[in-house]
Image 1 (cartoon, rainbow, N blue to C red):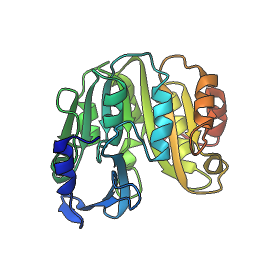
Image 2 (image 1 turned 30 degrees about the horizontal axis):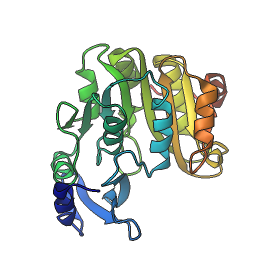
Image 3 (image 1 turned 180 degrees about the vertical axis):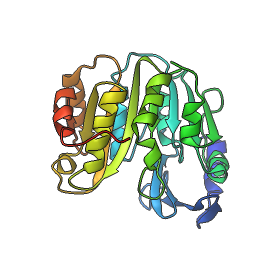
Image 4 (image 1 turned 45 degrees about the vertical axis):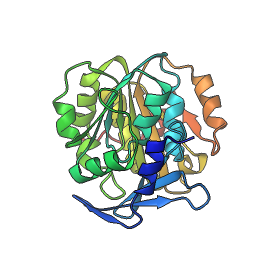
Length: 270
């Protein structure tokens, strides 16, 4: 059951679009599941969260990322999220890895304030939400300070190019601990030129790469999300592949060797 405070907060959620620094934000409540709320930023779905259950992930790419994170050694994590939105994934991580310390950054200061007002998010130090530029934040971080870095940054429906380059990936490698993991949400169209180029970039700058996506996306049949996972400890790839296959929308795993083939025709992004 939702808390009394949370029920009161839910009643105050706006029903119309509201201005933010980068345009507008709107909350859309699911007609059949009123606890499920989607945040639209300038008309584009940015986040979806269950107000009552922080462990519920609606977006398929979030489910895929969660399957990868589940294979990390047990215990709290230090996690940096480049791109905050409604903090769906940080909220999930706080629930499944209690004691974690997280920082989520978003360039839109108004959205950051509104999200804190709208949703019952973990408080600092469990989760800090900061209005800041993602690349500037990354560049200012101490070496080997994070177990997990998640990149989920979009301007409209595209990731800013400066966050896809070798230089940005090298900054991620610098701030990750030795067995740290970098997760990237890449949205691409057939024949997936950006996803292939990003996989090539991460393999050179961060470490071994795994590629996760729905089979139709990997076959180049449609537009969609491609999750790239770079670095990390030695994963049980069979266990991960099984976890991805049993998702509500099954996903396919390309292991590091298959990912190298996937990226063979691409050049790293300079």
